Every structure is written in structure tokens, then in C-alpha cells.
Image 1 (spheres, rainbow, N blue to C red):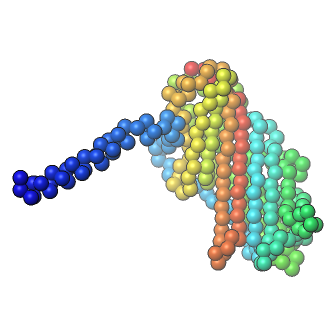
Image 2 (cartoon, rainbow, N blue to C red):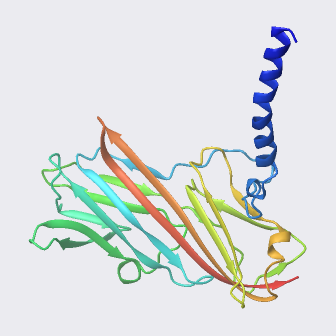
Image 3 (cartoon, helix red, strand yellow):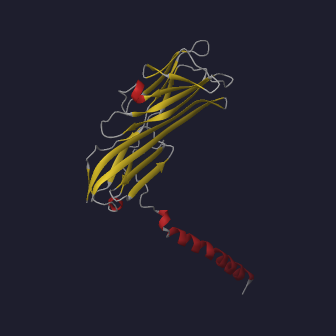
Length: 262
């Protein structure tokens, strides 16, 4: 054997294990999970709208978090929101007039009696809130600390069919969403405790607007009532000179009871 032929033979022998490993990996059932979210090609690839906008120029760092829950179709929304304001040296502050949806937010002190955070409980202060409502966090009077400003949060949510909807076992379940979604969780549980769960997480700038549960996966459910739960997360962080100046985290939860009739 010539040196050239010997070198080619050694190269082929070295490459064989790599090709075998690739072939085995390609056959793995883990590569195509049965509940992997699907995006129908409906020609609508319009980027989603912003999750947060700011009107004015706040001179404080703003942290907002919380969420809303819709227990059933048309039921009153529950939940709470928190806002923390910090001055230029990182000290938490209270300002003369801070509101959410035109309602004054409650001030909470830390154990030492210093300003800590603002709280609004939806069912106590803003009971007419709906899931799709834009949230307006307003500093109407910032005293000597900051000019007035408004942070508007646009919640995302799944567009769920109402309670008592009948799922046809021969058709895929298509659930659209609205807003700029970062994470979607969709869970369906039958009367025997069998659960189908979809988790979809992304930085959504692509125009994706729906998730699909294939009919073949719905077939694992027992006929009868299906308890449906969703969780949709939006987050946004904006920096100024490398330091967080605005941080928003908002969760939307929805509950439904459907009927599976294959």
C-alpha cells in the first residue's frame, strides 16, 4: 500500500465513528418531541408590538412586577402589582403621587420604617380590570426627585376559547396569542390526571403568534372534562450607562374547563 492510500484509509476509519454517532443521534425520539410547539405558515409574520413604553423622562430606576389571573371565562380578574422606585444612589423612595389605572398605589415600608415598595391588589383597588387592559403606572407628581412620567405595560395572553368548548379529537388544537410573548405554558389535564403540557420560550421578534397541539397528542386524553391552565410571561429590561433603569416582569394566567370528545 502506498503512503497516500494508507493515509486515506486512516482518515476513513477515523471518520466512521463520527458518522455513526450522527446517525444514531438523528434517530433519537428526543429530536422531535410530540408536544413541540408548531407555527402554522399563515403568511402573517408581522412583528409583535412593544411590551412596554415610557412617556416622559424618569430620573429614578423603576422596577415593576406582578400579574393577573382570569379564573374562568368572563370572571373578575385577580392578582397584584408591585412597583419599586430608586433614586440616583440606589435608595428606595416614595413620591407624592403614584398611581396604577388612576388609583393611588399603597405604600409599604421595610422593617426599619423606610420606603420599600408600592402595591396594588387588583380586586381591592382596580376591580374592573380586564385581561387585555393596558396597565398605566403613573408618577403624576415626582416632587424634587423626578419629573412626571408614565410606564405603559401591554400584557400578552393566549386567546382561549370559552368554558365548555368541545375539543374535536380529529383536529389539532390551535391557540393564538397576542402581544410580545417571552414564554408560554399551556396545560391540559383530564379527569384521570393525564396531562399534556406545552412550554414555549423565545425572544419573540419573529412574528410567531400561535401554538398548535397536534390531534395525535390530544388522543392521549380521556374523554370528558379537561382542565386548562395557561401562563404567559413578558419581561423587559432597559439600561442607561450600563445600569438597569427600567425592569418589567408581567405574567398572565388563565383557566378554562373544556370537554374532550374524540
